[in-house]
Length: 421
Ligand code: SAH
Ligand code: ZN
Ligand code: ZN
Ligand code: ZN
Ligand code: ZN
Image (cartoon, rainbow, N blue to C red; front, side, top):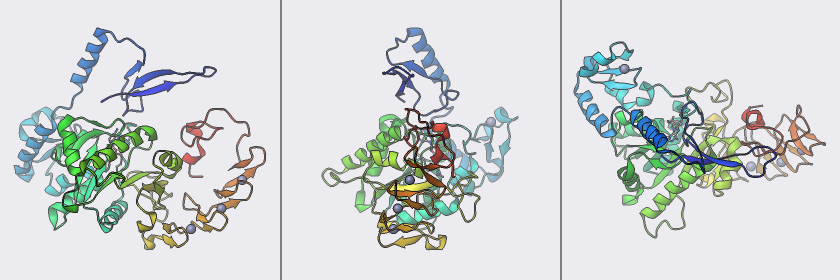
């Protein structure tokens, strides 16, 4: 899909130079597309690019993958193989071609229903950064949105939530539906075109063109009063601005499905993201608020729950629903603050001066009279900088703001909000 327009700023110059780069890959090693905004691209280079794109298409289309799936489930267990190297279900005629690849045998129906367990998470790639919900968190999210009365879930980059809904729906009487939008095309082997759209959330691009757009539009149309909510868990390295722009387009799609009824409303949404992006998210979505619930992941050693894992997860739920409606599990220590009218984590104390439960990371924060706000317990007030900060810091500041928190004095890589100190 379309590239994003970035700007390179260099010191001393007022205006930077603008260039296009890949929206999905933050690592030039994954995609080296680069073009100055004012650059003239020669016919030869254009042709070379098209050639490159042709050679890098997936080996099967979504439609083809569906036909293959239909054949695959007809096979006896002994003939159901999955190539781990190619991350692909194999039909017997293809075994030969993959003979020196590692494969799994006897793929059960249960395994086909949990593709996120079968496929390996693309976590090393900066592009996908696939961190899968721990079962506890996934179950919590699903129960929460059921309790809130939603019957349709637009799962944007949440394959595990989608999978939980799909497999429940196929078992018992469970009338919730989910549509997965994700850039990971491997999922097209397991879901129909009504269940999965190949989608890029950094530029709102549907790879399946108008037909996929229409699938999404139809899904968002709330027939028989079935309310829809969007749940998204984007890669944390992603640009908030690009994500917000796509999410607004999805919200607009929802709004336009029912003329009149939705005019002044927002599509309900859960945006799962680290707490230190709070101000960035609120910049784009002022109606959102951050919940205290800590979202845990299976394959992320750092992002495990405080009680059972090694460290506290910094990942939270941002939502445009009323915070008082988001009930957090008391057995995990969350309690309801009657003043704030929302559930907060056990360590989050209500500050009488701020008149709110101010902790962002679950630990008890302390109020600084000089800063007139609550700060992290490990911070102290520096009279030089005239604000609270880490004990160890240099009082000199650079002009450029940090890309993550927007504050001056450090670069993105050294941002104090990124470390759980
Ligand atoms: N916790 C979620 C997974 C979140 S990981 C779960 O368990 O369901 C981030 C997800 O976003 C991955 O599924 C990844 O494939 C997807 N993703 C990464 N970049 C994307 C992009 N540009 N557009 C759409 N989806 C993307
Ligand atoms: Zn193979
Ligand atoms: Zn409170
Ligand atoms: Zn305070
Ligand atoms: Zn202070």
